[in-house]
Length: 224
Image 1: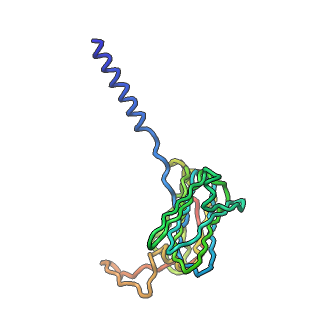
Image 2: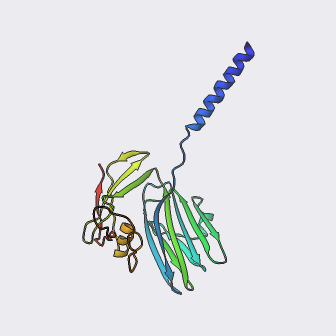
Image 3: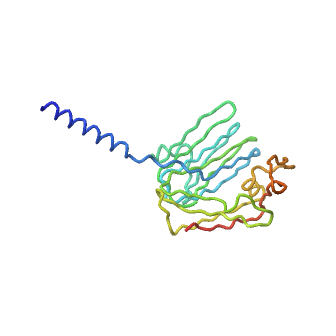
């Protein structure tokens, strides 16, 4: 009888431990902030500004061919370069050289709020891709009001800030389309010189391809 009670207690304890383990909340996923690509001329320097606020971890990564110098500047205009992690354990630097592309990455724990700057400097012609992402308990959800917009119409974006599925108030959400190409990609995919013919069958009326929106900036509405 004692052995059975002991076994039952052990099973209950194991079940409780398994239940507790299953209730461990997963770590927040990285949220992309910036993604750009381009070409640098020999001797050229280009800087990109990334605003951060209430962020747990920020990651800046660059793919470049052949090679490029990647440095950061904090909101206090302090330089962050490959030697910085030796004196600051909150910063990790990774370099993975390759035959065609090299990979550079800075990861920063609890970065200071404000405007961070990523600076790329080339000594020869360089093709690059830059990305920035964050881990934060607050995430942004957004969607367009309509699936298709005509030229001249205002593109409405409905957006909200959410913390663990709880709607947050007091956030100001803004967005801009810096050029018409971006607006076209946002609405209908990558623009082309001649749109491909529509192959959908529309029983009631002729089908015409959607038109890209060219209105900038966007108008935003916060979802209540």
